[in-house]
Length: 115
Length: 112
Image (cartoon, rainbow over all chains, first blue to last red; front, side):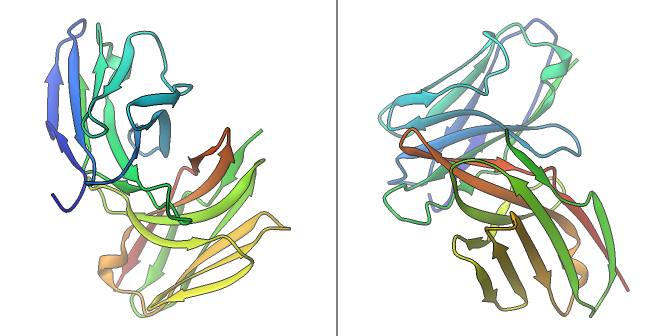
């Protein structure tokens, strides 16, 4: 597709359940980023992928959070045993670091609500 | 450490000019981005500065002073649709890759 896509757009889950969030980056973009945005807050970096490798996982808030990327394309962010404080919008972005500007382009996000 | 400051909220009148400031402190600075984010939507890229000076793009301009750790976004001929949050993001290069650090955003309300 032309832009970054994410699914689902909304996810409501019960505390303690696992969730998977998906990101399809722009075709050809080798870099992929996950962010979290709580209501009225800025974007909080979670993890960065270059190809299928994740050289920076420093933003993952706990070991309940994990992410993978396959085929240098689709990425999945998994949250295990969800907690209410995990409620937020999860945004994915992709970029092509081969260009000097390396602009990140964002998907529409997944709004996660943990009851 | 890293710190990015921008005002939380601003209001302006349709047709006017507004300037949104951003100050930052970071190591490995390698550019500054401005994004626009309408409520419930994804951030969209507005502008990029890596050298000192002004970059103009239609009604929007962005300025950078690296020595002062300062940037601003200037919006001219404001329209109601410009009501949105404006995110300042500093790019750091470390370990051979780029990373964006975002400010909390400035919520701009444009009124008639």
